[in-house]
Length: 116
Image (cartoon, rainbow, N blue to C red; front, side):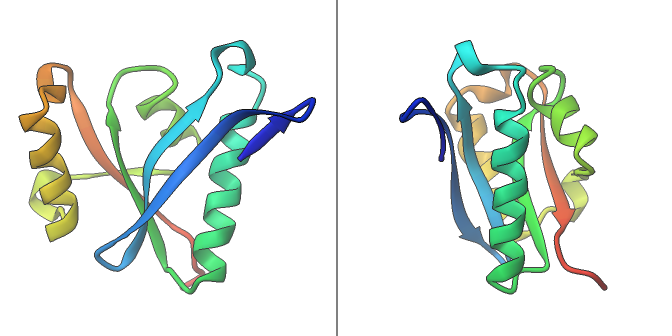
């Protein structure tokens, strides 16, 4: 959770999915967009994943929306091909498709959080 003047301006929701900590949602109040709040939230999520013993994190997102796919790529996240989706990520993508989110290009992504 990110705060400004004792007011919540962003949060990240995490779930365990397969063997990873999965970013279910990241939200930043629009008036605080572009100020690094989302980046700080994602870095904190990575720290939490590592402290809990996870080796990687996952998420699904819109491929082309600047504060989605390109943002995560700028933080070192990599696209996971459909052929390499874990069972949990594949199920998440199916749920998104049923909800109509596939009207726009979506991708699954992952990032290592542990040193190998």
